[in-house]
Length: 206
Image (cartoon, rainbow, N blue to C red; front, side):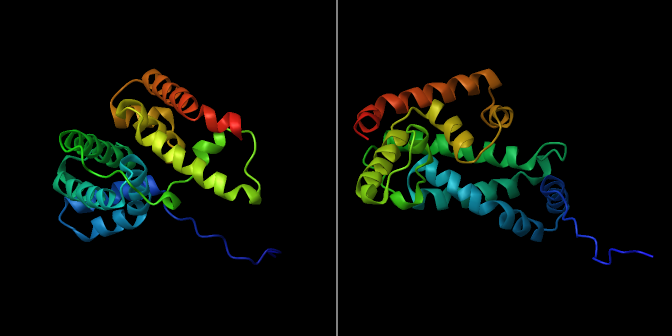
C-alpha cells in the first residue's frame, strides 16, 4: 500500500528544448510558434536592450526587429544551437548598428527612466547598501552608474551587461559576441575597472 498519495509534480519541458521545438515548428510554417517564443523571451530581451541602449523607445523598436529577424531567418536556425544565444547575437548586432547610427546622428538622446536601470553594478562597487536616509544619494549614484555605463565603449559595455544583468555565462557571451571566452573575461574586467575609475568619487564619498 502506498503511504504517499500526493500526485507526482508535473515537470515542465526544458526551455531550451521547447525553444528548439518551437523553432522547428516555425520553420515548418506554424507561425504561431513565434508567439510562444516571444512570451518566453521578449521581456528579458527588452530589459537587455534598455540597458544596452539607455532608451526605452529604441529598445522596443529593436526588440520587435529582433523577432522579425528570428522569423525571417527561421529556416537557418540550427536546432543544435541554443536559441537564446542566437537571439541575443541578433539583438547585439542590432545594438551595434544602432550605436553606429547614433554616431552619425549625435543629437539622439540617451535619456532613460533611471528606475528601469538596476543599481546592482553600483552596489558591487560598494561594501554596503545605502540606509533609508541616504535615498537621495542612492538615486544620484544610480544615475551616475547609468551614465557611466552609457559612456563605456561598446566593445566592453555589451559583455558587461550580458554578464551582470542577463546573468549569462562567459562561454555563452563569447558565442553571442563571436569572440573567445578570454576576450569576454578581459572586456568585463576592463569595463569594471573603467566604472570604478568613473565612479571613484562616489565610492570615496559614500
